[in-house]
Length: 359
Ligand SMILES: Cc1cc2nc3c(=O)[nH]c(=O)nc-3n(C[C@H](O)[C@H](O)[C@H](O)COP(=O)(O)OP(=O)(O)OC[C@H]3O[C@@H](n4cnc5c(N)ncnc54)[C@H](O)[C@@H]3O)c2cc1C
Image 1 (cartoon, rainbow, N blue to C red):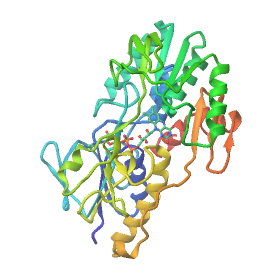
Image 2 (cartoon, rainbow, N blue to C red; image 1 turned 90 degrees about the vertical axis):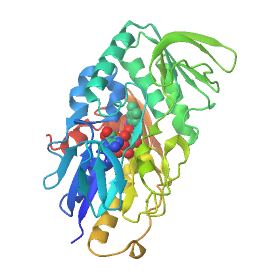
Image 3 (cartoon, rainbow, N blue to C red; image 1 turned 30 degrees about the horizontal axis):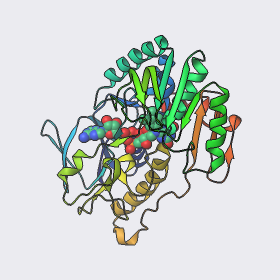
């Protein structure tokens, strides 16, 4: 039976896929890091670093039957993957879930989980010492960061800067309006409809002066560039006929395959299949891949199966610290109470601890 599945990358997409295929196939998950890093908790970890102990989780109890190999995959072909030390893992199906990078200290650089810990502690000390903070970029990460600092360090003067004239311009207007009102009530200075034109560093917080597109200048003891994720797609260069879209993501076909190889799939942030770069998107892709791969190993072909369709109105949950926030739940927006219960209170840490075999 052709049921050997190799998954490259044990982030949200790869780890959950490995877990859901564990009883159905012979699964090998190849992940370069020692620990899964729950990025949704890393924003609050910056103001309460002790959270890192529960937001970084070892892989040893993720799978019951399958294997987790701690290694970096260097190349992929239709018969398997080659690791950085030149050893091989053969496979019938391969899923690439190599994810994305973000600014320091929100995701580890490569395999360096210990380095992320040090970065969080270092920047937490800088944050404590700073009086004025500027956050450039008001996507979910920038907005949440402003909310966490306003909640846990209310004495800081926080400015949130964003090019669009409204927060979350692609979501129902009520979401952005409610969040803006709550941030302002918490003392955050919102500068919307203006862009920082001279970011000295795109990936690390620093102290300096910003020139804004409306002509203002703004000095801050700590400037956080929070301008989005960039996909880790270098590995895809080892596949035939791969092309890219924005943020270094890879184009996929209707069955979320990134190349002309019929048994190689891609999921999560790295795969541009129409979904945004979110954990939420992986919650639609992983069940589809589980179903599809289970059918393929039982002898079906992709032509017998339904293609993947993107999530048209995915939910988004935006806590501003543990008690406040707003969310769009695909049909309507909700406020503090549900945002706290669904995400703000615990940031899905318990859920991830459980998924990784911790209680
Ligand atoms: C601070 C922050 C907060 C966020 N909060 C939310 C949120 O609340 N909700 C939400 O929906 N989204 C959130 N996101 C987005 C979310 O983190 C991403 O969408 C998610 O990480 C994508 O999962 P993934 O599995 O595709 O990739 P990643 O989580 O990036 O995982 C990829 C994995 O692949 C491994 N890898 C890469 N290359 C190789 C290789 N060659 N060999 C072996 N291993 C390799 C990496 O080490 C990594 O573990 C947040 C992002 C950030 C930065």
